[in-house]
Image 1 (spheres, one colour):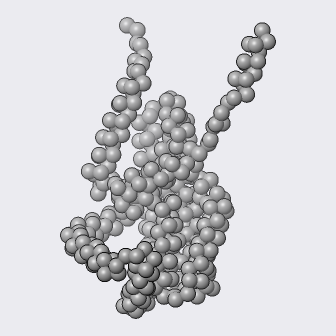
Image 2: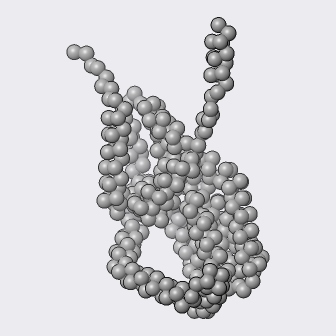
Image 3: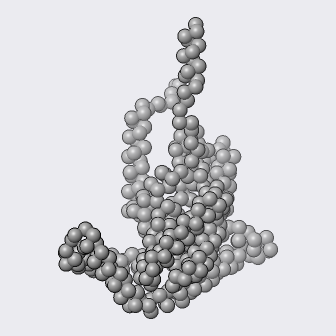
Length: 370
C-alpha cells in the first residue's frame, strides 16, 4: 500500500486555520483563570533560571537555591511596592485639593468653550452631570465584578509562586518531555528552540527591567527639574505603563498632563511636560528599545498592536505585558518549522522590496530586441 500525502486546497486550509484559531482563543478565554497564572509562572521561572543555576554552581541544594531565588524576588517586589505606597500616600492626602483645582480648571474650560462655540454653559454642565451619573451607576453595577476580579487576583498571587517553584524544580523533566514529544529525529531542532526561547525570555525580561529603571529615572528627574508635584511617583508610574507597548506611553502622558493641569496655573508647564515626554520617547525608541528590548523580539508594529488588544480582552492589563514575549516565542517556533515559516515572516519586521520593476523592464526590452 502506497502512502500518499494529502494536499488540501487553500480555502480548506484557511478555514481549518480560522476555526482552530477561534477554538484556541475561546479555550483561552474560558480557562483564562487557569492558563494565565501558568503562563506567568513559566515566564518568571525561565527568567529566574540563571539565578537558580548561580546558587547551584556554588553547591547549594537545588530546592534551597529555588527558595532563595524566590525570596530575593519577593524582597525586590515588596521593596518596590513599599516605595510606591509611601509615594502614593502623599498623593492620596492631596486628592481633595487636587479635585478642587481640577474643578476650577474644568469650569474655566466650560466658560471658554461656551463662548467660543456659542453653547449655553448650562447645557455643558447638564451633559457633565448626566455623564457623571451614568458613570456612577455603571461603576456601582461593576463593584461586584471588581470584587470577583480582586479575589481571583489574590488567588493568582498565591498560585504563581507555587507554580514557579514547581516549574523550576521539575525543569529537567519538562524539557525531556518536550524532547520526547517531538521524537528523536527532531531532537536538534527542539534543543535549539528551547535554548533560544530561554534566551529570548531572559533577555526580554532583563531588557524591560533596565528600560523601566531608565525611563523612571528620566521622568522623575525631568519632572523634578520642571517643578511638577509628585514627580517621583509619576515617573515610576510612567515607567510601569511604558512597559505596555505603544499604548502605555500615551496613558502615562495623559496622567501626567492631568496632574499638571490640576496643580499648575501656567500653560508653560504643559509645554515643558510635553517636550520632556517627546525627548524621553525619542531616547526610548532610538536607543533603549533597539539596544536592549526590541533587538531580542523582532515583531512588527501591526502584529504587536493586534496581539496587545487581543491579550487585553483575554487577560486584562497583565496580558498586555506578557503578549509580546509570547508572540516572540511563537515567531521563533514558526521560523524553525518549514510549513509555518510564512507565519513567522508575517510576525517579523523584515520588509520585502515594495516593487520589483527593473527585472520586468529588462525582460520586456529583451523580448522587443528579439
